[in-house]
Image (cartoon, rainbow, N blue to C red):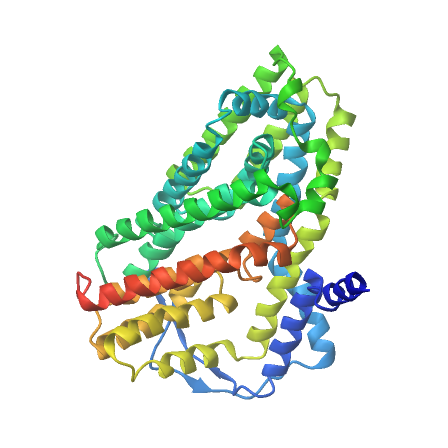
Amino acid sequence: MERKNNERKKKKFKVPHTYVILSLVILIAAVCTYFIPAGQYDRVEVNGRSVIDASSYHTVDANPVGFFDLFKAIPQGFQDGAQVIFFIFIVAGCFNIVMATGAIERGIGKLAYATRGKEKLLIPIVLTIFALMGATFGINEEGIIFVPVGIALARALGYDSIVGMSMVTLGAAIGFSSGIMNPFTVGVAQGIAELPLFSGFGLRIAVWVVMLIITAIYVMRYAKKVKDNPRISYVADLEKEESEIKIDLEKLEDLTKRDWLVLAEVIVCFGILIWGVFKYGWYLTEIFALFVIMGIAAGILGGFGPSKIATEFVNGARSIVFGALVVGLARTILVVMTDGMIIDSVIRSLSAAISHLPKSIAAVGMMLVQAFINFFIPSGSGQAAATMPLMTPLADVLGLTRQTAVMAFHFGDGFTNSIIPTSSVLMGSLSVAKIPYERWLKYIAPLMGIWIGTCAIFMVIAALINYGPY
């Protein structure tokens, strides 16, 4: 009898479906357009960027989102997120062609076998690699393509898909958010704040090191628990469904000549990707093209005919339909807020709320305001253009350095991208990893609390030392 009651309680508190959660947020955003006063800032062009004129806020006629408009916002959200949605389909389809050859599986199996007994070291090593990539050339959307590799490696070592995704995405998040030399966040924000490019990097390096240590410990502790008892994994049931993807280290097949050719081709393509992103600023369109080339070439080198290549591509794309559609729903939230003319009103109110706080507390408040705004403007450079024209003069008024305002921005913008459902990078990574958002939320919430607390400490330090220059 007691067991039945426990089962009923579990059913009662079951987390809603991801689509339900996002639909509720969309509905709340629509309702807010009836109560939050509509307002707008004027935008001006500065060095080719659209920047808010901080003194230009004015009220406009209310434009509440009506019943039919709410549903029209959904296809608009999918249209706005189309590039990322199709990027996910292309990545999944092409990578499935590579996986179907078996070369990745056998190659990772050999690597895992060679590191048996030392597998714990791979977690901090992979985290560090991606943290360096995020810190130097701001890897963000590009990290999605590495998620399947991280998951295959994690499963080969006896972990789950969450560990695999964490090694890639959390590593990239640390580098991107600490912003040592991130051109998309720190570079843009410092330009608006009229600071020397990438100045003040010393404190940001300290942030990078501290966050990397904290995250490595967190992921390694979870990984150890999962390895000791796979049933406590947040995705234990899903890991059983994906059992055919796991690698049996006791029954490894030798790598064939075709395998070596496929692996070499994949490594070359990833090398070209990194070179193109870093040297020529490649983005999704170029990566689309490179992945199509990689998938087709891998299929040919693996001995597949045209029909087999097409079949494996479709199978891969089909497997992530659920997650890809989540990106469109997440973008719908932003469409509703924009159509309702309330995003600028929210930004103005939040800025005003911290204008009378003591110096150190105000620094933390600026970071929290940026984190809240990030839910509605998850684009790093976009948020910088929207908020830094306001935060820069606010820092001047509060007696904080502009460098502190920039730090508040890249902390608030970056770290929360690993939890907010409006982040196309997060939702895209989850779709590729086949991890439901609500499962990831349970896993990441404690780490997010630690990250925010640590960022708050660094914000206080920045305020106390008059973090400079300026």
